[in-house]
Image (cartoon, rainbow, N blue to C red):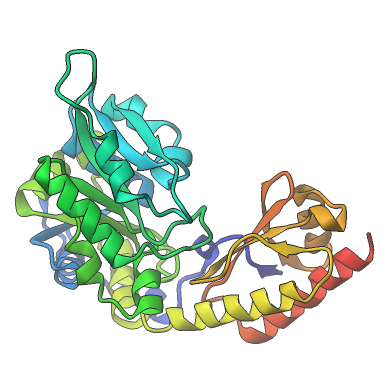
Length: 342
């Protein structure tokens, strides 16, 4: 199967498996796992933050950030299709006790003036604005890159109002490789940032959250409360070290393959691109082919290609390290066959 459902399906490399086998471990809840400590220090340095913490998943990292920054009864500003709002099971309400104030973005990018207008005035009837959340790259906007200038402007507004900014940077390294902008520059526009080791970077599990030392010290207790405190976690942290040291530059290959896929699909009558590819995510509309997203995905599956339906007539494709250029060409051929058989 050519699996284009997500970059979460990647398998650990041989080097990652060996690193896990050889990892020196200790009890991470006691902060005694040397491999986890090494990973956290490397991640903090790459992001230009004081301190970092290893967490089991990106969702947990985001939710730890929200509950660390906010108090119950506050409100957070988020883009209306952001992962924190759209794909994390209403956890901000269930765990942090905060409500979202959503802003419609343009390809995931919020207008800074709209963000400024959404900040609550001091009024007994209103919740206080406790946090502003950004997402880069933006998943549901097709892996779109949020411009650094936009992040800087929103961060300046947040600082003027004494409001922290959290970045869901699950695919932040994709944004960095595609734009040529260092992740430190993106992270400088935030008070906290989360990124995934288990997507394009190819590690089997885990994410990082980073920020000030005081923020991480407080967040560490929330990780424990959420059940994210792990023991000999070096076994899963070791592949993360390999990911950060050797897998960042190769993200450019995924972007090139996504562009190849985009070019091939644009040439097929009956399918329409819903986004211009910037990184490794494509959304395709299948309505003109007379197929629902589900039907289109099932047709592809019968031809050895996996892709996820993402709406009534939308299918998502994601390129990653386990799909090469020749497999992309085979996927394009499969799409041609599915459309031609309708």
